[in-house]
Length: 144
Length: 334
Image (tube, rainbow over all chains, first blue to last red; front, side):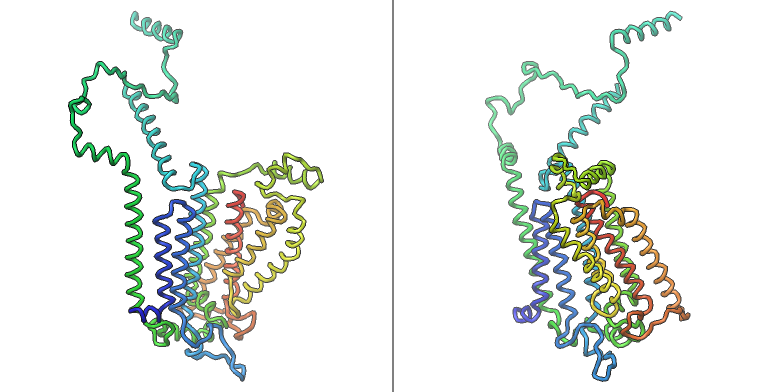
């Protein structure tokens, strides 16, 4: 198994990177560090796709010319072009998700003055308790 | 009759004494019940002959150390879960076909078709560009729409809160341009990202490099079907030119040619042009009708049918979106 892992070392590195990103997502308290963990997982996916598309001894998928000026369209000249398109999709989605998550984090910081998710949750529960007390009192008033 | 007079009199009396009906929006703090220790019968567990049971000891201990123990337990458990996932995926990776081998199942007939017939069918020298903007163009349309939706969402979340008074900003801007230095203004100018007089180096470098960056971005977009690059990378380069301009000359200068309205109009019209052009081409191509879009000779700038206009559309959307992200995060508005 270990020799096979050495043979597939790019894929193995991608898998370990995604595990590190998941650990960041679970363990970090700071929201921005959590988002960085999500980005590490994205990067692991790109590395895996790029590694799957590579073929030994071939060129990048941009047409080459032979000596007579003819375009070479033999299959054994170029690497797999499909993962490049998939990685592009992944990058675009990751950029959008990161931007939306960061903007929500900014709003959280504006409201509670902290990036720590635990402190923000504590503040939120206290706020909710106050709201519940006020609404209960209002209900009693209506009943009276 | 008598009762009615009594009621009116009561109302008047209450009004004079201030006992009238309360306003609807008045919030009164909840009254706590009177806490008189001698009226309460003592609980069994508060009597001094009561022995603390094991469950009560547990509850006391949990209230003291529970959160700490839970945090430790959570950390250990999540590390175990991550290691387990890594181990499972490593076992899968060990069973995958070897890296870089020609006979991998990923290198199947789809790839063969793209490489063999891609240049003939799409006219693009860059096989990846031909793939993402011709064979799989709806996927790329979805990507551009995702970027645009992300920018609109950030605009909705951040745009309304930090809106500053534009006339005030313009007045301050004019003040600095007229050479009059207000100390109070200079004190909070860095937080507003307004044009400052003392950034001569940044402005000199920007005036030299912005045209070069714009030309570079246009070249990457326009030759997207010939060389590596295309709408996404070229749009990112163009957005760096906009961001540099905003940093060197102030957001107000950028507002003169790229405002929120420009962003919305250019991005949505580029997306609509993309959708219409590609929809037309898919309809005609799928029904074997002559679409009338020439493919041209491979290797020319004006070749590869629809790929060049589609690249330009994608470039406009990406440039606007990335600059919009920067402006929204630093300024609160595009």
